Length: 394
Image 1 (cartoon, rainbow, N blue to C red):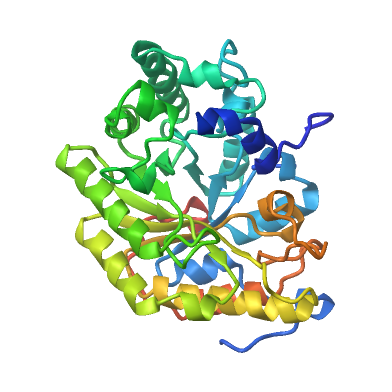
Image 2: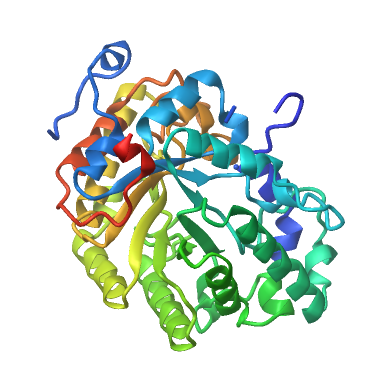
């Protein structure tokens, strides 16, 4: 990015706080550190595809240093566009023309490496950046909001038509406290009305019918830091899915972010209940993707080897349950390396220790989390692959 500022999730989410209120291109624990880097490894994507699962990660153009680019190209079969299709990149101010420079770079990187692309996000109430004020979105008339939101959506989908395997059409639109399961504390709900979500899916289907259309959300695994119960989010999500399907909205998949909380995970996560809920999603005809998987290591010791073992245990426990559901077609980490994790910037540890939430450490060496993910992918029930990444035939 040259002299461009690396705008982290914290930076642009903080910049849009007012907007939302009214991120270079078997099972045993194995050795880590220098020893682990010398262990011959099968790339995670190849381990996963043998079981019919597409594995990948998010990445952004500002993360594409040469060393990490090589690692990402080796390990991932699907690329989640972490930052480069958000509005702070596409349309940094209300008066800006659409700028596809960053999006084009990240999509080209994926294509060069035979990777599928998951485009994120077409409709979200965040990601605007510092060039937007509260009134720029909350102060719109219905007509103005429709022109802004849906006009931008159409232009983006048209620009990338045929190059995107899946779109997250609607991100974080669900709340147990909302109306009929829909969040009401977002500008689009208040300016356009609750139908904005269904309409966004219709537009995505019209403009790029071959791409999978996803509704994406979080909070499904354990009680969160605010005391919210996952069962409440399960019920709200099913209510929203039913409402959209009843209205004829072409929703095809649920994206489960899976930002996992390490603190007391074994006690707080209930695999049987979680699998039953995934089955209810499946019974509605939707595919399921794990889209933003990482582990917040709060409550774990600072000592890296101890913490790494505990983080790996969280991954194993979670994937043991989630991958039993054979309609889970993709597993996507939110980043591959601790060098570039939003958790480091958004939620720094109180003890000052670096976050260690991802498969590779800051030096790009595989950690116990890597081997935990690898093990669960290797032993997952087989399923018919939904996608065959271009690199599979390379």
